[in-house]
Length: 153
Image (tube, rainbow, N blue to C red; front, side, top):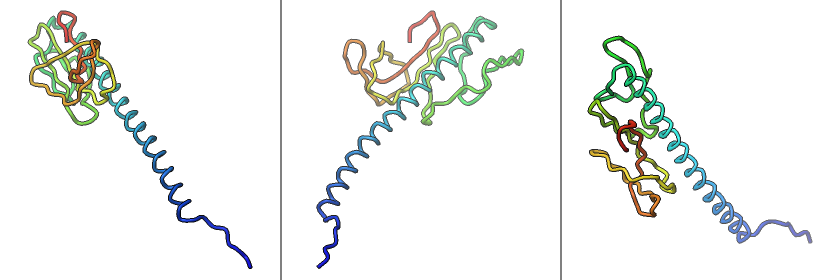
């Protein structure tokens, strides 16, 4: 009499459960990595825009009163291009720009709520639903900001 060796239903279920648990760990780490990557891009975008705004200020002695994301930052009088295309948020949200010509503030909403922010920023007319911690351990909105040197974000 030959006995065929095969996996029992219980053994197959245990293997499937183990694979499911492992894949959930991998997927959650992957999603966190994607959020961190998009946040790094947001911070980099704000720094690039900040450099273009400072170049604009050097020539005009004023900051632009408004900017259009996805468009170029150009001096309308001379045609000088400071930035070919002002970047948009990678998730389709928008950045926030405030200026009266003497200063500017530029904000982005961050996705990864596992980071500690160095300050509390409360821009007007800009909402962010994610909460992070600040240096004091308090819950604050996950907003990253840059600004001109004569003001605080």
